[in-house]
Image 1 (tube, helix red, strand yellow):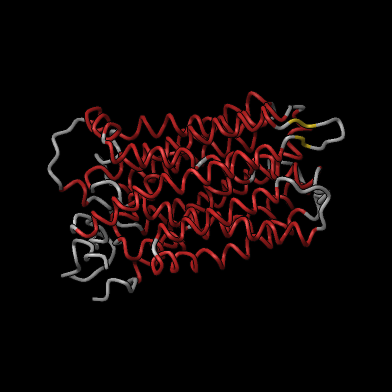
Image 2 (cartoon, helix red, strand yellow; image 1 turned 60 degrees about the vertical axis):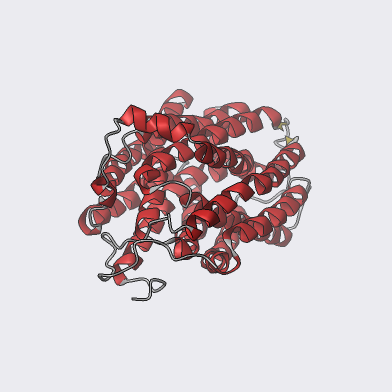
Length: 431
């Protein structure tokens, strides 16, 4: 069998993970465009709004650490369904929140469950797909970000403009319920990792995971990778409306155009990542991202067309970075540690993102006329973090290449993936 041709079931898994990711991303990203409506409605400051975003991130980080020791002790399908059900509950609470404390509490609940789902999904990808095609898989799964902009954000803005900011959360609940049912009915058990003998109890397993030097390198890189999105996105809509002078009616067109471009760029960047190399693609995306961030964060009143162009280029660069970095990170842990590694890695990202969002809320200040000042400072901080990640990802790249050359990276074993007998149990030696 050609391991580079996806079977029908593998295609279903990719589509299912992408749709699941769509609901998670939309739940997070919807906070940005709703910020312009939510802050005046709840009478809160930019700092308080930054804390709403941080509340999700911090609780997600705590949940990831707590779940890490147990992440490799259960069938990944059951683990996925448990945390997804909690995520739906938390999003529903956001949809009925009517005070600032209630909204913060709802975001904490959502983060406690939603923060673990991403790591379970990454472990599933690493279990079912070899490294040579993970760029393609990540590229398709990352179209969830584009879909959330093409479909989710414009629809969410329409619903919030038509009714109020609660409506988008209730829309996410309805969509997520359907996704959960499909997962329960169609996804096969994913438990190959349970067949590997292990005497570790959950706490020892967690301790071993967080103390390994090669894992710590990946965690450090993830910490800085999370900085950009959490710093810029929460205030993106407020910056566009108040500084760039894009109206609330024009804002959906920005997200729509950017989403369509990202939808096309995701699979293309995934294939290019597999062809050129994950690290090379990461460097290209990071370099482009740094340049665009510095331009974007220093813009004043800007025509709609130019705002759209800048956003398209920025999100294309971000997509390239995400696909490449996640593909590389998935090759770091051994199969026995995948769930724990992914959970801790996700927690590190959430903690770092929470700190970044909180700090951003302290740096950015909203003037009486609505304009945000010091947004340019965020641009310099984000660009600096991007530059550092290029350096931090290099030893991870070398580590993964060495592991592949030694044949020590099992993946894509076909367990539950519909691959025929005799499929390779390890990734072939890289060229």
